[in-house]
Amino acid sequence: MKNQIIIHSSGNQTRIALLENNELAQLFIETEENQRTVGNIYVARVHKVLSGIRAAFIDMGTPKDAFLHFSDAGDHLDEYITKLNGPNAIPGHAKKDIENKDNLSNVQKQVLAGKMLRTGQKLLVQIVKEPIGSKGPRISTDITIAGRFLVLIPMGDYIAVSKKIGHYKERRRLKGILNNMVPDGFGVIVRTVAQGQNKEALEDDLRNVLKKWEQIVDKLEDAKPPSLLYRDLNMTESLIRDLFAKNYDRVLIDEPEMYRQIKSYVGQIAPQMVPNVELYKGKEHIFDFMKVAHDVNSIFSPRVRMKSGGYLIFEQTEAMYVVDVNSGPYAAKKKQEDNSLKTNLEAAREVAKQLRLRDIGGIIVVDFIDLRDDKNRKKIYDELKKEFVKDPAKTNVIGMSDFGLVQITRQRIRPSVVNSVSKVCPVCGGSGNVVSQDTILTDLETWLSKFKHNTNYRAVDLYVNPFLKSVLTKGLISTHWKWMAKFRIKISLIGDETVSMNEFRATLVGSDIDITDIVMRDESIEEVLDREGELIELESGKGNKENLDISKKERRNSSRSSGRNDNSNGRDNSKYYKSSN
Image (tube, rainbow, N blue to C red; front, side):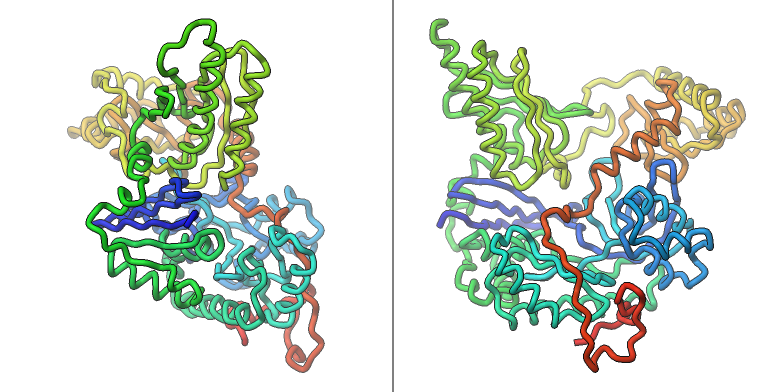
């Protein structure tokens, strides 16, 4: 079997290895502290609206406020606000734009979202991106319920089919089946795995997602924000749902209880695949048995050895990952170019593999061994491009510079595997050195002086190491009190174990907007926030609709639809609370 899902469960940690062509392609680790949250739906409350960056911070009861960019606010934000907060929740000056919202540009829709959102409003939100580092989760008000073949869109009015279903006749067949099946007030996205499925299978899946929506609505009637209304599948189940029977031939599990759970789940979503779910009973570790233990262990090491004898060194900085390529055995100078090319080509394949294995996102700079010939440099670039075709995350590669450097950007979907199961030293921050107490206190006071004199803000949240916080608040007349009296600003000290003794972090009050460096560079906070807003929009958590074949649902003039209270867009607003089959 070429493609397999191998699951190792031990204590409170589950490791899921994806094997493609019998080689480790990806590793996922799930623990109690590191559970999958994408797809979870909450009733939440608006904490703060920052129009300057076209975003709002939402209280979901999570450790960090969630981040809602206005580009993720969705086309039905006004309807959700009205349903949850009453008809007077939307200010009058926004209602004219709402009536014309179908004709507004994307930027105008974002401005409209800023007009509608108010502190204290209740919202129905869904996590679209895991929290990474000090940032909270990314959320959207475009609510979706994912099933095996379909994704339900409450308040939607269209049927979209994945363009990965290449044949137009098949997409048209699926649209025809669902157009007469999906209730008014709902839309659906047809997933790639639905290709070739019959009407009964699609109807069963639609019934399942509609039932989930009804359960959410039932909970919503009595729920007080912030509270969780719907928990999507855990990491293991979501991988089974999205990948098994589509790309993978077998699931092999080494824990009996999990084996029974997954077998039962597969029996519900793909009964024909139940025989392909197997329990591993061998005495050897399951990863050793599948011959992937070495690759799994390599993920947690900064050094990765290659077959040629060369090796890679992975190092993380604040801004990027740096990968250094080192040559193997010594080669004569006359063969140096050929030897370097051979090592670099192997390194290119290993870099692409390791970035996917480690789930590294953001900017990655690879320092390859110097090559003199432009044709050879082009070969390295072409090899990287070829290898990244296998990677589901979006990547971009910039050709090799004269210094042998290649810049890669990779879509950041979740924290890297290493970061998800490790913590930076809370004392030194990973540097190995700690500055003196007087030094950090002087740095803090200097920053506060700049903040007072260079900005119009008079309140700030300061994140410091808990030990440093105890020093600042010690005594009847503490250093904290003296600073507030001296600078006449409100300083909220927040103890954070992730902040080392060498540093501090400052944010605008009640938000995650980091202004530490902005103030030190004497920049305008407003100008930087405007630029940040544009960047955030480019990183929107919403799905790419360019990959969908979208069409409006046809109106049904049958007795079933007579007497309904339809709005001008053909949606039945009463369907917000209950679906009909």
